[in-house]
Length: 339
Image (tube, rainbow, N blue to C red; front, side, top):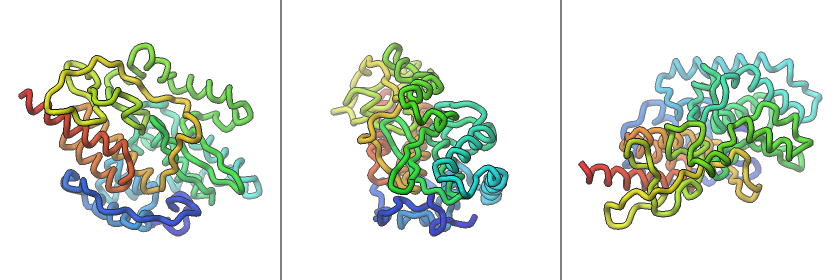
């Protein structure tokens, strides 16, 4: 499990910017018991860099891998895939062309099981080809780093992407759409194609308050600001009377559920001004955050708290994780009060 903190561009948190390190989290008391790999993971992330872990290894641990042998298995599989990709990445080609070769290989050879909203787990991508924007962005950054391509992550309200750092320019890559590079010359057609490929979540949300995963209420695609999903100080309506995510704690105890439709995220990213550059450590935090969303959907409040607390340990500035952690506490209290 060799680290790539010094050699891999994907492990460099913010190329050209010093790392501030990861300050102590005030929410650590909610983390619960860590696996041995998680203990090593958080110790490694303390300076804001992946040193002992690779980005891939860290993402797998955040996805739920707890056994070192299993971790080695997945890392070796990706290394073998990178070897398979090597003849397709021509050294004399410009970086953008090389990135396209990496990207299209990834979708053809690995991410061939289809887009699925709740497929943040890297194991689903590697075993079944199912992916979402977080897992696709992590995997693209990992593969790109094998060929010296400089990338970082982007967090957008309701979405995640990769950014390719080129000489004198950047290229923001929509990692969920297999033909994205082929439509670079036609941004309008590209945007329509991406929206169609992802199921036009935004349009469905406006009309019905649902998306392609009707049982997944209170989620985002795949990271996002809860204020984009629910009106302030309200709770979303969950199936069978369950409580959903609220961005803000409810005032003074109980309150009835507001009948607001769920506003889902946009598959077509908003303006560049809304894009937040995230470090390799912060990118892994989005995996924990999404796990928290899944667990809250299931009413597993303690586990949802733990996942969001872990996300905040890796990304203390994450308003999404903090909002959902507080919402989980709030909704758990309401649930207990009704028992």
